[in-house]
Amino acid sequence: MFQLPSARDDRTLHFVNLNRYQREGQPPEWMLGKFWQIDAQIYDEFLNLFPPIYCGGGFRMCERLTRDIAATYFKVGNDYWCGFSDLTDTRPEKLLRAICRLQEATMKM
Image (cartoon, rainbow, N blue to C red; front, side, top):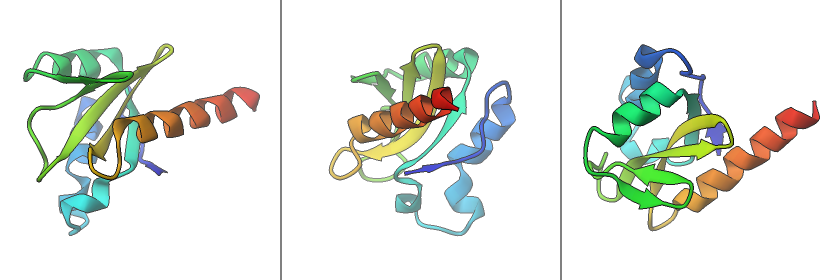
């Protein structure tokens, strides 16, 4: 798992993160396990953009990056997150656990 720059209060950076694999010249699978913080406005915008596919802690976009890789959005406590998951090997629950561990570590500091 790898955290990308926070896009909290920065809609433009959210789109940069969503398309980072293209900017880096990488295949879409490179995005698996990467996540970043967003805000409630971005979360709500994407929740209402396409019909969501609900999962534990949030939802996945019905529009895929490729095959079964999709942007996944979570609300954890008062924070909002986005990352990419693939239901075959990077399940949303795995991303959610990584985010929760990161938040727990941050609170201990």
